[in-house]
Length: 216
Image 1: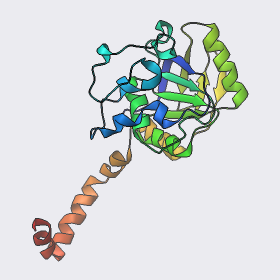
Image 2: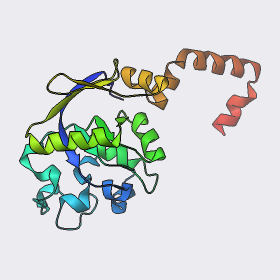
Image 3: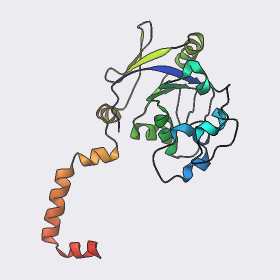
Image 4: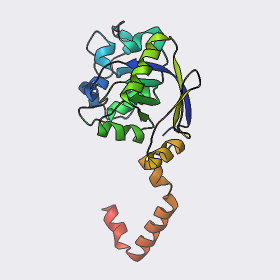
């Protein structure tokens, strides 16, 4: 998992409440058995005028010129600004996969669905919860100024606005540690790889019949 410390990026606004995970990554793309390749289909039904299918070349699709991520001013955005209850609906982990693989590193909203919120941290995304009025003011700024960028300082737990003002945010200390160090669940386990190997050797020495069980 890619570590996140201080990130500066262009902000893209998704000005809708209750965006569910089927809108983030439609159900037909869940057929894939891989964990990669979902970025081109982020918000697929909104980004394109035709119906997309797994494995389809995005260059063959008809983009929706009115959708925010297809507008040139938001090309390369890496911070997603959303309204309340973002990520509701089914618990598919493909949703944060698609967001991260599109190029976003952080999300800002008044609230997130619980499972989606937890899945973001497990996949290198930082979901930031701010008061609704603060989020509304950020929407106003993004709409008013092309190329609006923010700096997210995770060590100091603050968002730095272009004019230098700061907005503080809360984050669970353990989740913060994992993001700062690029540790997902597997990475956390592998920190104890030597201990695990030692335990396996000692257990097999004490119970050698287990080896025959593993071999069938």
